[in-house]
Image 1 (cartoon, one colour):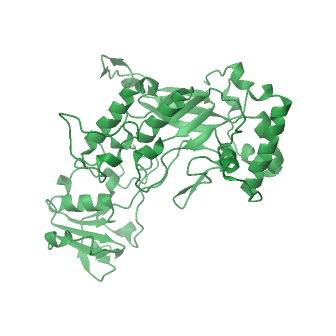
Image 2: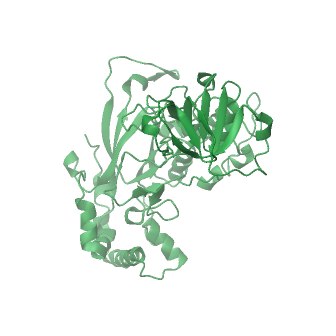
Image 3: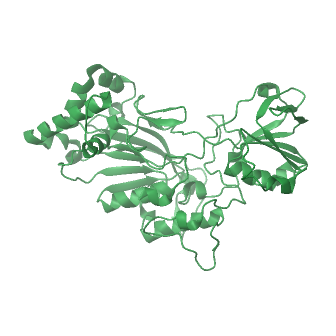
Length: 438
């Protein structure tokens, strides 16, 4: 079913005056020219063009879906609510916190490549501590302060970050906005004015129309059409009923699938759940075990194993140091090594060896490194980062993910053709303060 949309929302575009239409047509021309690279806009016009808004337009309350209740989703929901919008936050888990919620479960595909796998969102391993001090991790108006009886260290464990985000949600009454145990399965453009699924755009006709009619279509749409979205969700019925804050796991209940129409969607689903795996010649016939750090939790399963860890980022360093307590050997490989920074490696000389990247692997279980060293290996552990993934999002090619980049986006947030009704919060991989979201 599609949830009904009020007539005031549906007819919003047609109620504008002719003078407003003129302003929007001029704005639409600027938007088209800018997209084509043919305009010379000043900074303010460029911003207004990118987010798809007219600075003279009257502020209106919108119904907004926020996908994800992690660090980005929570603060996005708060700011949207402060601006008077009706906000619904969809969260697949049972608590707020996103990637900071530790889950001892792992996926049935250790490499995380099977699109049909039973996915686990969190990539936390049990021993993880932050690699940034808490002073840099808090929101500007809600600092990440030590609390009595909890982890007060400057670099706390993951549980402390999850608790901080829970505190933030409670402080600003955000929990009432969140639909827990609810997975977003589809987000698509909705162009109809009725209440049936037939109005959902389900082919490429919308994009083809934009390409065929070009700026003229955009100019008209900017005055007479506001893009809305249908959001299809699946609510896990066996875990949604609460009584005295304790989950009741009823059996035999079917999941509830619902389609709801929104004026805007803010995507905050994070980017640490879809593994990126190194390509190595010979892996298809190599007999050993492979896994991605996304599915690493504790070191014990690697006891007495010979392990290769690929990637010397924060996870690779943490996991390598943890494995040397139980593994027979740990071979740590990366594109390059900075000996001035990696002074701790000599402390573990013998049990841990550093190499350049893997050159190839062979059917007898041998791993050959680019530095000329070879050894028989039991496990290859890919600590090779993550890919952007929005399997639920259907923009008919207007927004794409290519070469680890999401685009086209203005300031990593707004896709010009679909702004301001679609936005992304928290996309950059580089480490930065959570306060950047505010």
